[in-house]
Image (cartoon, rainbow, N blue to C red):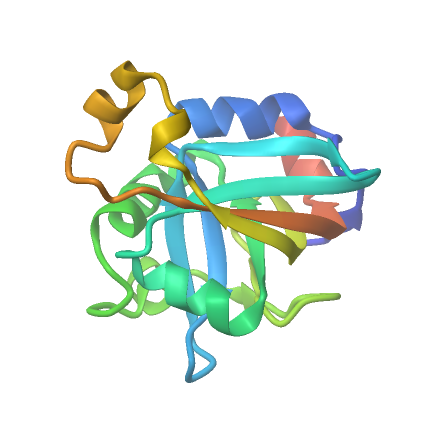
Length: 176
């Protein structure tokens, strides 16, 4: 697979489609240097502070939370549809209990500008360095969101990652 450097908004439609239909994969390293993948369905891609950014939400109860806190970086990987079962697994099982890369047959690709790897089997990878993080403030939500998504009070931390590299398997993307 040949990954070509692309602008961070290249294939934006694929990025959005994937988030809405099963999720993308957020990857970070644990304290032992083992990659961990977590399925995400909520993320923002755009420009903040004059920089290309990807904002992701991670609950403190998730294994990934400690990984990002330790490394200060992450990658967001857009999978093709044929990885639907693996994406589901990464969203329902914990990296505390599983080596998700081994279980899913993922190939870690070394980060070009971050410590966290990408996933070779994915179409697109965004490498991100955390430049800001903050906890969601429950008092600023409309009640419907709190009632529907935070009944247990497990509010997310938002990580704003400056996108320092984006690359894609252009040939595969253009085929399907």
